[in-house]
Length: 193
Image (cartoon, rainbow, N blue to C red):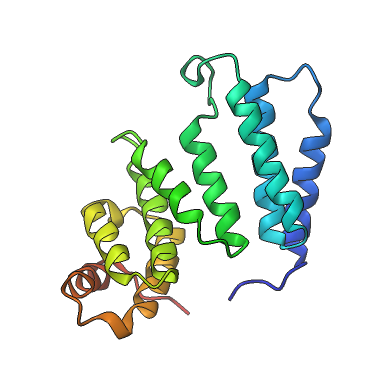
């Protein structure tokens, strides 16, 4: 169950993000500012306290990323476009904006093959948004495309897969949904009490 807006964890996350943003100095690397600003937007979206500010921070993060003067590969733990797209997708999904799909798609499509865990996480988030857009067949094809990568050990992946299975039950007669449902049934670990 999602915490109520203003939950203590959400407030703490928002406060930490604000403190990080306040700590950014004009001389900080632009790419670092973009990353922290994106985190602030994501925290605000999760806390559901200020939708307009969250969107404004996403625009600022994108502008900073566009201005970044050094290649991400030249910086340790560089913030890259695909990371920004994932962060934007997360924030928009938290705000109930299903245009998150295009951002998850952009992030997913530009990931390197060695990023299996990240691909699985973004892929299930993409499929969940596709399902929320009433396109269970698209969600099923997204998940089938991930195949064995869905077997990564991740509570977030498991949780989202469980939600997807529950959400597409009325559509299980679709051949793609039925095939994906069988795949998920073999991968989802039963909840322990």
